[in-house]
Length: 126
Image (cartoon, rainbow, N blue to C red):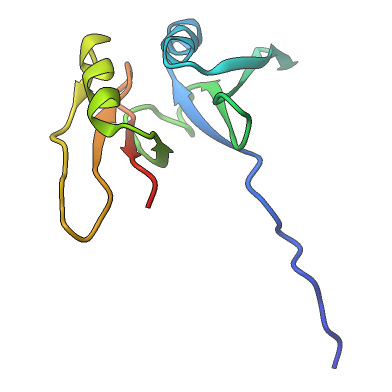
């Protein structure tokens, strides 16, 4: 029997489809993300790679298509040291933001929707 090592070792990037890449780029810059790449990777296919402060998994802001529509539940979970402050900041930016969920068995968390109605989540570390 052969022992194999893991072939999948980390998550590089997650992509969200948006209708206005520039507006979404500005939004995430307001939230502290840094633009690592912004350019055409193919004809009429612009890729914007953004990273949270300190690096880690990057967020790719891509143009929506019929195959990649907006208004989806992205499943993306962001981590923040202060969910109450992050909640207030997103409200101040004019985004739709869900209630703070303060359950005794889970970290403080909430959901929000970006400019295109894509659902994302924010939580304090476990």
